[in-house]
Image (cartoon, rainbow, N blue to C red):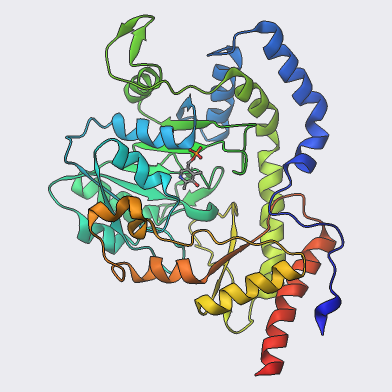
Length: 389
Ligand SMILES: *Cc1c(COP(=O)(O)O)cnc(C)c1O
């Protein structure tokens, strides 16, 4: 009986303090420079960070902004859609994806996701297209790309812009059937990301960015994010006040060079989990799409049913292993989106996932002993339930 299990060191979903500790001198320097230079808005670190992130992502224009939700809103604003335009997006995502469309008065049109990748089902996207469709908004959920091959094809064939919500998959790559390999967020007309502290590249507060290969759109997006101004006090467009603080940019510049190492650490942990948890009946390890790399923003298991998922989570909690349910309610069933009139049962995969997913800790600072403890505890739950059956 594993009731005497005790973690080797406290396990957290996220351990930013430990992750930042070796960077402390560099972070202190960056902070001091910003305070001394006192250019807190659009200071030199903002352009420098944008340039460095662009180089990392293979050269798109990078427009920094205040957060990942604004990035989505600005991306949609840059399309200049009519007020009744429909935005096709997944029912299983963080609410911000739908919120960005809804707050602009655009109509979120939800579609179901694939049970494998948890991302947009291309056939469902195709079926949801109408003459009012303004954009397809794909989410690269948990760190793996949506089916960009099919989505790009549909978007091109139907002449509908593709937007990528890449808040969770920065650094993921996608290989098209023709051999071309690109970074997530740089395939569609516009891509967005978030530097929310818990994301794979997190700031020390809010932050976000937009990617595009189109120079004219990049200029327009830069203006939109800065009160629609073309030069100071000359406002060509109705925009937003959505800028990345100089302070956040300076600190992100310290973190960006470490992203590949942190991503590799997440991937090693995922491999460890796969090896230790694969083949347990009633438990599914994350699917890996052969066309996409996976940067494991989350390592998400699927259980058979809701009661069992909750039992596993409670068992883990009781033994010192935190876990999270991303997400417990699909967006179409959130009260705020009831006005769209989607009934329960409309998107069975998304709804089933909300009842059965469970994400384990996967931050890069987990030790081998902690990984062993996490997987032993999950295995203990299943041995226990089997021996009682
Ligand atoms: C975090 C996140 C956002 C929003 O980013 P913020 O910076 O928190 O505004 C949008 N979409 C997805 C999928 C996210 O995970």
